[in-house]
Image (cartoon, rainbow, N blue to C red; front, side, top):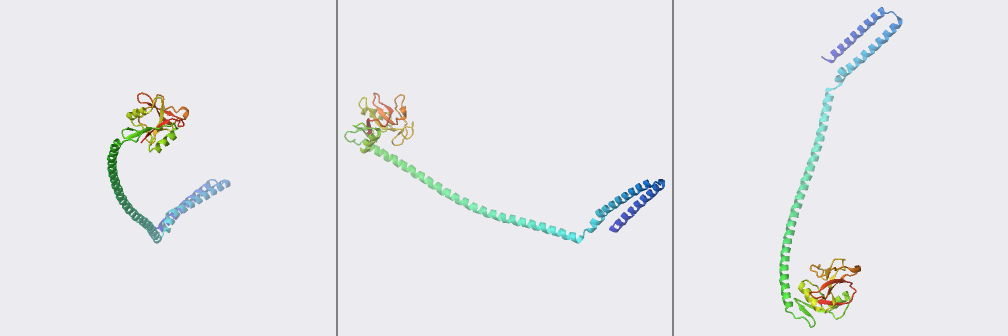
Length: 283
């Protein structure tokens, strides 16, 4: 069915509807001749006509006019334009992804080269570390052997007059009573330092150097950190011979260590570094 046939059918149906309505109105007019009733019928008829006209326009626009207004050539052009636009958009996306892929490949190659360079550097550093470790072990062994030779020589060495020998060291009790600092200076002037006691045997030996009732400074202090006692060479105290209840840091002013002469080996005590007493030198 073409557009003209649809239009004719719509027109015929509209005319038939109008004729039926007019006939119905005439019938009602004859049946009820009242003037008021005639006005009501006319108004109703007018509404029906307007409604029918609107329905006809809607049907014509939706079914006839819109499809007829579409130009096949225009539709084909529009469709082709849309396809071209979509194709261009896809091509741009593809080009962007391709460029990004190339960039990623370049970055990957650079990272791979960096990785290989770092691996080579790591191997070199590891090899150098192993070589240094080997050299260190060799030096440590040589040092140990050299120290044994030195100790052997020192054991056979005779101490100077007035000094007493124990193991590989020589000891001297100072003759003047001074504070801890000055006593140490006296020892340093003699090429020695305040004694560092490493064993029970050395403790007994040093105690035997003192006369009964005498105390003497040794190379022990907690002046750097209260309560942390260390020897003059910086080593911590591992073997201690403190008197019972010592060190007590009386009045928090006792930072220097002394040996108290006593039968059986003597004991240690903390005292004020300002106190004046003898000192025991070791070299």
